[in-house]
Length: 350
Image (cartoon, rainbow, N blue to C red; front, side, top):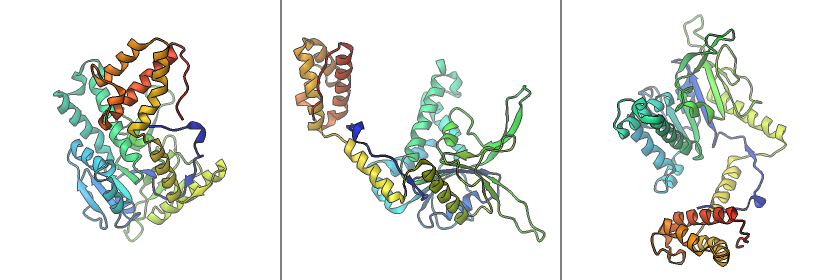
């Protein structure tokens, strides 16, 4: 249930910290994706592991993910009412390694749920619609959770504009140009491609180079901060932090808005979230003026039909309880729609 006044909203600000940022790191094996990510929040990172790539990683807590159901449990515990507070005390960062397995896990989940072998077997595209909805819902819950979310992906080659003169091939994060996987590349603030640099004359691995800007005909990269330095070289935890800090400061300067600590952003977000919550009595007070005006205009039967649609035969708004809050919101929305459709003017309660 939500209530707010769009004339009383505060302007947004930009935070220069990693908190609340969504970062996608991708590249071939041995480019430092997991290692660097694990060093950003030592002792405060939850590794959501869809593959066993953590044997050489220390300082993180890990949970193995064998199914989409496992992933849903993690998201629920990170964002739901029961575990959220305890989880926030333990973790600042959630690293999904590898995120490119998530679309396939979700596909299997929906197939099992619909009792089909292939989503194409579901008529009218219903299987794919269910897949996209389920995947977007869970991934966006995690993205909006306030943690620093790091999505780690393998790389793959994709041909664009096939069979045309403009055909070209690019390195992309695996499984992110599919319908279900699109959000994995769309939601990050930073999409970073890690380019391997081989070994030196003594056979030691040279640290990778991180690319933060798109290079057509080469690789996919970029995000919401075009002012980010185009290269992070060498790609280390400290250099990644610095690049993101610079990107945020430059973006804030370009927009003429403050660049603040994330605590300020989180406090504003929590304040806005709290102000949107509606109590039972407040919800009834919202309904009252539009209800009374429609009643006065002679729409008693229409009002009664709307109320009984959600509260059952003989149901009354005055008798609704806490468990009916969502139903009251639906009743309010339908009454407002009905009033507008019938040109009935009314004044909201203060």
